[in-house]
Image 1: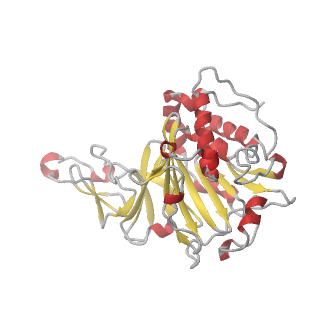
Image 2: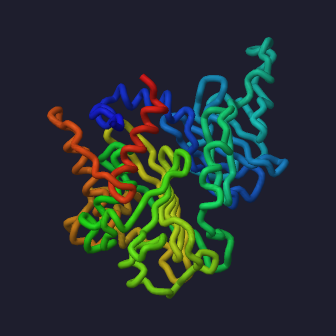
Length: 379
């Protein structure tokens, strides 16, 4: 029988702290695309659990990843999500200065205050970096092996060309979710709910007409309503038709959702591609950051159309819903609504696990996810 995560995994601060120490300190997180780094000094900051990291382009055109704090007193180097730092990285606290290669270059008043300082021993702490297609991933563990993590996806990946003339990036989205990050993952990889919660938006498929396929620690979803694997449910294919297809993504054969363990969701379609990163905040709360690329016929700024979008905070939250979730016609809103309901149920001390429905198009993937979590978080 598959071991299940305890209720405390979704509600207990101590469990959350353990996740940050044991899971996320050795996990790969999406940091951006290679196209985000055009000039030396271009950087992007990202988090893995509570570990702040950043990627920066060096003068030698190479991308490097580091922990996002000064080696002197720990001040965060980059507060913004992205930008260009010029030829050096300067801590705003005492102006310790680092080269784009992470080496400590300058220390004010060094002769008087740090006469014995070994600059070579106080460079920025490196993190691991990996590239797959156009995507950049980072890991707090500098010795982490990227190939062993990503290789199970190779040969099964999406074909989208982000540099193509018929593809452009839309405005990114941020969701503030009142649920644990694992609740959202479990909902995303649950094929059992598609025909019920999303009856009027996705229209299914029912459990025996979709499947999740394991790929190492990752999973790939397909609709199988016609007896073959598709990247979209039949209802969406029929309604959307062939208008606005992206040339590089027209040909079937790739999956409709890719879950990269532990917290990245990639949704490629013939009309675009989105990459969602779940960022845990505390037990029972998380953020979801979404970047997406669309065809020329689609809106590049859909925020005002999304239920719960608040212009003042630039976030999407159930706090700002004005229409009942099941009346919005938006499947993502339906998912947020149900995940927050599940979290409220998990918060009850009386909750105990119910059975998982059998099948790769039902809830087997949740069991696989629990196995992975237990593997990465030994007692």
